Figure (cartoon, chains in turn brown, cyan):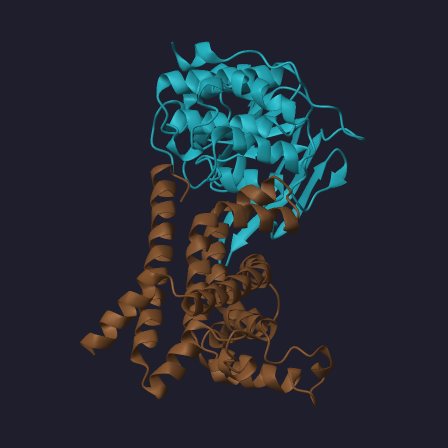
Length: 232
Length: 251
């Protein structure tokens, strides 16, 4: 264990090319998926937050339930769509980073939608009468709510990114863990551990932890700055 | 320098709408929450121009009446006709300033920019509006760090940015210091002088005497009295208004 840890630190400090490639792909896939999930989830969350329609309670239950989507189930569903015999097989996306992005987007969009719905609904309670008084359109209301809740929504995005970058079940099914093509940190850790190559697995694990710390630290700094300026 | 001294006149005035919003006719307006009747067959008329103060003890239904007039609530029964047309929702030709201003989590300037952009108004007016309410020196400050009086002046500037024909005010100076009250009354008086119809809910007798052209006095959800200010204050006709003006406790 101690020897493996020493090797892992050496790998990280040496700037190993394979390690950098895996980390780079992980960040590219998870950040892209987080961005897409925000584009999909935020407007949905906002519309449910301000909308009053029949069946809203059922939608809320569904949104909350989808937060707990098992990654392997998402991976399987995306696999069935993208496999050669599936309806989207002609796109040839299976075992590509794009397929991994799609799977992660499906996995975290419900998280972004459900959490942002709560944040935006709380803010809307405060703003609703003022906005109605100003005769704002739904689009203007949604835009204003998202902008004014931007610091809280950053945390929502972070929760989504955390889920995406740490999951292994979906990306290993649709990505296949192909070296130099679809190998990301979590799938590499699983593979290297099964091979008994603990050094690379530990190095990737350390990097994952550092990424989590850096992202959390950055968001916390931004939020504290916002609180100081009374924007939260 | 006092808050009132910071205020400068505003040149822009509202453009008249396609049909005048006044006169206002309120007929048999009733509002119930379950078994509780908070407004009971309220009827009155308001003519164009001037300032009407809606007065009455706590629980008389003043603020709810204002929200009904603005279309933020729907009455249980009755009619509200603005300019001869029945109104069911807030119209962009009115603006309401709430007792507790709801400011966006943005800078002072951005709060005005938001309304100007939403209403497709000239964004260049922002500086004049902030100067008008004495906040030109706080343009970049977060709105939520303003004092109570400054926050209410920003809310007023935001309302005036919409060029309202009717400005509805719900106890705009409640809990404010005398300097802030003077500043806000000055801004409202200037809006009135430019032709904006003022309808204001107040508990402040001094303010009502200073600003009112007309008083609608509510008691227990009904109009106890509607009279010109010059008649109401020296000789109120209703017992409730008489007791209220005499400083007796009216419930």
